[in-house]
Image 1 (cartoon, rainbow, N blue to C red):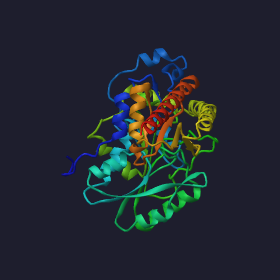
Image 2 (cartoon, rainbow, N blue to C red):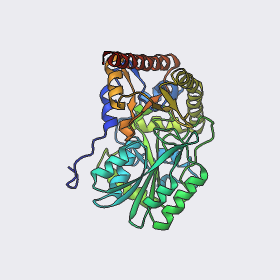
Image 3 (cartoon, one colour):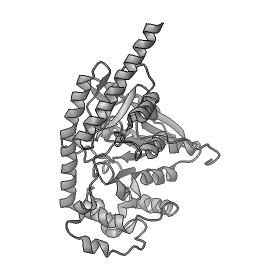
Image 4 (tube, rainbow, N blue to C red):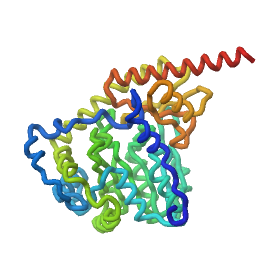
Length: 384
């Protein structure tokens, strides 16, 4: 219980954490195939092995915070709080803003952490949705305008979006900022997929458009370094200082080794190489997904993602998405994310950032289950 409110179960995280290391084919991951430590160190093994395993500065070393700040125009180390993954960044931000009866406007579908935390803290959650129109996922801005009011304390968005892979335009980002400005609401922008765009044009950030902004990012998705558990918040100096005090109650600080390796990863030259690798993987693998959808078009369709290693597939089968995912897990040892986990039955989220052969076999296992479901239904109909 939190503030007398029952904990809102984070279904997707529990589903993935339970099974992702138990299956033969994990297509639930939304990032690219992870890098190895040796690919970051560039022959610096001795220096790495001699690192002291003490505490680092609890908001991240100044060197790491300066390196992160350099990604954001007119930011410096004082604007940055380093966290253990972007999920902790989201938690700290939401915790600091929400209490019972606070009002938060949340983009859906979305990584459901912020939605669940807001519910748990007893906030009033008002969603606005992305709509599929003319082959694109776009925010319903009329619904957004209706949702935001003078009591709105926080607006939570995800750009690029999880699970659709959609990217908001500069104009839409500016419009959201303008609406937030009119009511004085803060914006929490989860930008963890920035850098994983298919067309290599970086998705617009909310940073620098409006003072009351918290930008969350990290090394898990676009950088292929989820095992480092390094995330960050970029915001005003005053709020970064305040959020640091909340961070004191959670994991205290990043690990010394993760802080060190994050500095290596975010060195401008290395960062460029890592993001180029990510985009190459996506550009090579998305055609595999497109071809698979075309071959299975009687059952599946999708809007190709603009960013991220995630394909949000719409299906025509008469089966609940969680039931489909459970059967795929148990009968085919293959893991995907059901649309139910985003509040959207009739969809499946499939990650395509893995090695090509691995991805192909995983997709073929989905096809096998589809055929078995169809044959089973035909036998049922024949027996009636």
